[in-house]
Length: 390
Image 1 (cartoon, rainbow, N blue to C red):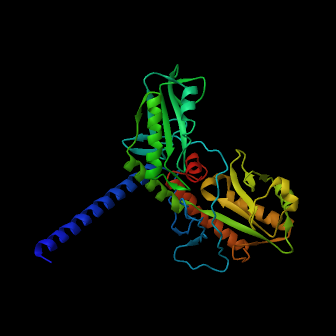
Image 2 (cartoon, rainbow, N blue to C red; image 1 turned 120 degrees about the vertical axis):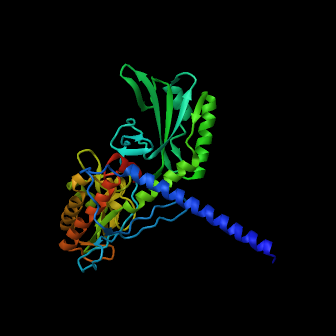
Image 3 (tube, one colour; image 1 turned 180 degrees about the vertical axis):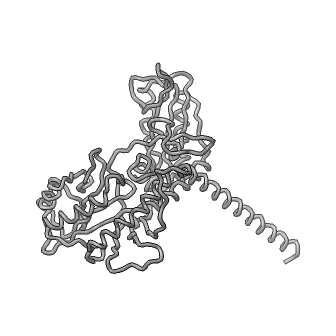
């Protein structure tokens, strides 16, 4: 091989390395920007510093992937787990509450939590496509043309109209009977299914651009690379905070009928929902804890008498349950109450008995997760957390 060929090969390798380094630096910068968007301002007493902890969390699923489950291990860094320390299964949980989107505003690209952009759009977790018609558009026509645009791939979409009334500029969910100056199509960047990707984004905006031609309206579309980079950064921020804790009730005898489980669950104030699980709710109707069939299969109101199970699981979805409602205390109380009523033993996923000390240890070590969620600008149970962890 000639010197010229060797020189070309070396130059090509240098060029490839330079491109790789440039892309890595850009991705790192974008991630830092996203972390700043969610980090509260210095001195904010509402966001306690997160204690160091080691936790294995649920892996988010991607299209075509099997559901991946792991067990979160709550133990102080550097300490060995004692006999009383539990291992509880982390599970994928579907969203069960309708959640609004928390308000934010942007200032030179930096989004601070708890400031208002609009009643429904959170600029930190949405990419917004703006449709500006040549004249006003009626809510009826906008809804008719955009009725199919409720999802962009796996991500939910909000349709928001902007108009002016006696009180000034107003943004609201599209509704009939109103006329709008513009329509904002807000695509959520990430949730438990992962981040919006290039294919999902490009297909969605291409279809939206076709609708804009029909209106007719100008269509202001955020850059695809920037949008998907934001989505990946947001997903990376959320994944380590996605903690779900399970406690099992194992039958000491031959198990229970679904009807018996339902009777005792309802006595404890739990409500059977269409997802086949019993929900413990707070006064606002937010789910704090769920009770599900540990043997698999959903509980159905019309088949409770025919159902049989020997294992029940109480689940706490940490990002979705407000810390102020003390959901873990509710979880432990339900476990003890139901264990007494059903003659059951409280165990982990390896059927090891969970002692009072073990349960207390979990309670103490969930605190760093709550602190990290608050520090990231998505306190447990907040509208932003409900959206991202849905």
